[in-house]
Amino acid sequence: MPLRSLRILLSLACLMASAVASAAEPVAQVRVAFDRNGVVSTRAEGMADLATGRKVTADDPVRVASISKLVTSIGVMRLVEAGQLDLDADVSTYLGWPLRHPRHPDTSITLRLLLSHRSSLTDAAGYYATPLGQPLKTILDDPKAWDDAHAPGTHFRYTNLNFPLVAMAMENVTGERFDLLMRRLVLEPLKLDACFNWESCDAATATRAVVLYRDRAPVRDENRSGKPACAVVVEDGADCDLARWKAGENGALFSPQGGLRISANGLAKIGRLLLGGGEVDGVRLLSSASVDAMVAPQWSFDGGNGVTHEEDTGGGQNQAFFCRYGLAVQTLATPTTGCGDDPFDDGVARVGHSGDAYGLRSGLWIDRKAGTGVVYFATDAGGSRGGAHSAFSLVEEALAAGTAR
Image (cartoon, rainbow, N blue to C red):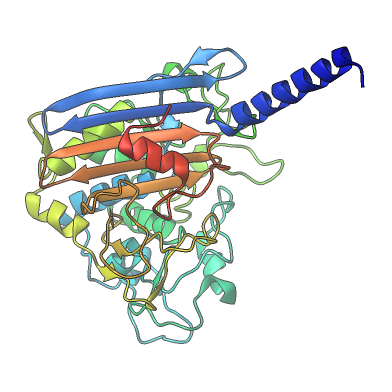
């Protein structure tokens, strides 16, 4: 082969290798470290929107996936403190109809079991695509919605469906739509420019959204002209008139399990609230006892008492991802054989929550003893390789340690 041709081929090979390496990098990465008093360091790299070339910042709202569950739990605890909900009452009382495992009709299912993923429900029958005007209750008639092998309270199985049911209980006792209720209970008192599924955010906030990608293709939140025309699921051909909403009918509409749009700086304030025992910047939102109740593990892995990964996004790990879980709060660094729940690789039992959806990986973790914490997210990170020392991905390990670049 002529030398010139060989050089051209080598150059093309180098360009292809470079393109592959570039595509493997997240589109955006943000990391915010904080303590009880405020933010101590911020790192933001990459693009919030590839099409416009808009760079990401720590103030841009992003769909943080399952960290939403932790924030929903804060709302629940506010209603518990107000005497409107009871963690250990039969949740059927709040739903207005009996929630029962078909094989265990005499066993009550409580908010505590729903929040800690021990309800015996599964996601196999679906949940999030239930449209406006349709009752979520019909999903529970499908046998696939239930874990046939385990009674409520006996097994951990990470299930998103638990949280729409929690939202329905919250709506029924207050008469308020979930997204507006969470705004009143949590977001407005903390002065957070955030919302569940965009409807209660303003147009200017929506235009700053971090676009979510898979393989550089946008999959969520291209909001360049403002809020989406419809923030909830509707049937084909149906209108999006939220006047049709009914309290307690469909708790999946505003995605309590994963639909919170909030900035990294906003999540840092949530972390500081937990570090402060329910108080942040002079605002007392929860009692310290309620925070203690949230973070205390309701379930700990003993080698066989639970499914240790999220079934619709996880699996394939050699180590367990979930090993301790409270009221929508994970505890890391579990000293049990087979547990890989320590992305920081330092043995510290941090508490918080992870997120994984639509190519995004996220985390909110606090060290209550040291009074420190970190928030991070990366977009288009779904293809990140497995971690070097945990069941978390390599990009999550790097963001946890502060070595991502």
